[in-house]
Length: 274
Length: 292
Image (cartoon, rainbow over all chains, first blue to last red; front, side, top):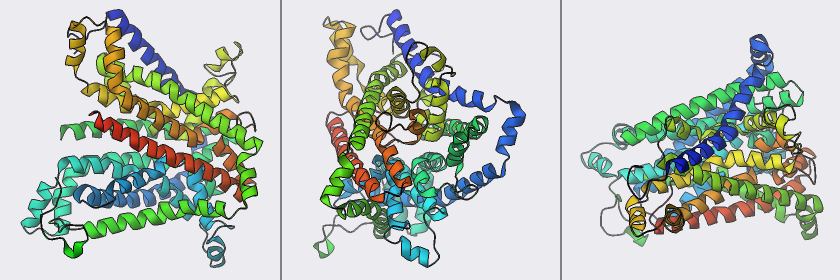
């Protein structure tokens, strides 16, 4: 591409601009990434592993996994339903619905948590009634799941809608007119068609569900060993000046982020292939 | 592409009969889910805010501490989005136009701020820019402290907004037709003139969209800022931190009032982003949806 006359920049321009761009990315992305691992291993392997093996860390990992296991399938199912309605049918208000699905991305994570405190907190609209009847939403698991669901609503839908619109409905229509049931059409035609796009959305959804901080911070109450997810646990360790331990736990999430990036790139590559 | 068969409209509802099944349940699930999880909870904020007296609401949203927080939030978010507009365009240009070894790895790396939990990003940036950090040890002696300053807030917001401009501009640059640039060159335009007169107008809608996405994201950011800012009222306290502080003091009314202001700004920006994307589509170079 760069060998075409008239659109080729002089070599020094190319080298200068590439160097500038890489320097920017290096400074803003790689240095912080490396800093996490450097800080995590500052006191050696033994301290690193000890920090990961504490009961509080273990319960944070377990809680985060519980939240993700509940939130990811729910929002995946929502994303598929929304994409089916939007990409396969015409109805009034469709564009408004697409904007509505994107809404949680525009809302601050802190406000996303606050809305559930206002509904279910001790001073909230339904909170006193729920608490009287023995249900605890805020400062408990249901609140964490709700806040996580809220911030991750759009991920699967916004990957699937453009993909399914581009793919068209011919194969599904053929399946139905040949007598396939709704379920067999979905499992045998639709799902194989959208699987890479779906996987892409689920990878991003999962990463955000595990890493969410602001929204869960508002609803968690920071009860050690009970309502601290991994990111909240990191904050507590940091505030208690256990820097190496904080970075040790942070390094696990960083590793997860790098794995997410690699998987995402692989899936995006498969998506382009298909 | 649409799954409709021409036919009579039952009941004149404006919806035609379809071959494909599942429209009713799919739309029903979508609307119910969104209402229960997103719309009703968000409406609760405005409902709670409307329960306050006018004077109390005004005091909560416009006292000097809140005004200082807005100033810092909007200022730092604007500067961060501007930095990202310049460098995002540069990164997108280099990724599209200049092949270099390792380009695919660098390309994948751009999304790191989307994949990295914000709290981890905040911790990492604090470690890098602290007085004994890798970069802080050179900046602090120069009289440029980063941690616990508005500069630190701006750097954190630049980090989390970094992918937006790259990801909106990149596909548009890829689709720009080189023939137009060649034509410009053959008519005697310099590379600089071609860039300013041909390329830049072509990517402008995407660039503005990316800027607005980065700005909107930065306004609501919390996790990456909380560690590096030190949360000093009037100095490094952003709006989301102020909401958090008020919640911790059980001042729900105050938190709700500021949250409703930030929500209105979020809605306005969301509409602006939609309008920008429509503009880009009309220009025939729609940026791909950027994932937050």
